[in-house]
Image 1 (cartoon, one colour):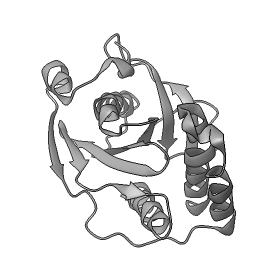
Image 2: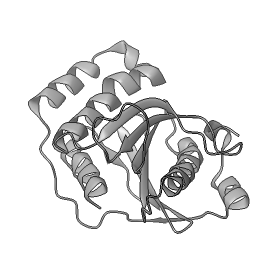
Image 3: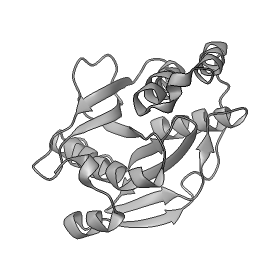
Length: 198
């Protein structure tokens, strides 16, 4: 079953015994200043008519932010785009973005610490898909002998970001939306800093 086949959080509970909660994921966020390069790139991207498609949103809005996260981490991570993550017949497919906490990888390797799912419109429609991907990431880490307590994910249309985490069969969905515009971008980068250092 492909990750994109999961449409409701109830499906994750029935198939994998993963429940969900809605609460605050990040108690104290230290804002991170974005580089001038990122600010300039996003200002150009928002002028492009092509940002109406999911693919162009990924390329023009999401990828620059993840490149910034890569730089802010002092290049200690690897960001994969459009990579296949196959665990079994029930958990298979292509993830839009996967962040591994290893540097300069040529192929996907553990530990996976974050998965980002791109959506053109509704963020809520992507929560079940992202949840399934987090289940797969957790199993992948375990298969590779990495006992990581918590794996994070995000669903975004490039402007709005909704974060979630998986820990002990509980999918926690942040009760806040975060944004990549204005001063909110500093908060968004601060969240990624929390994820990479947790």
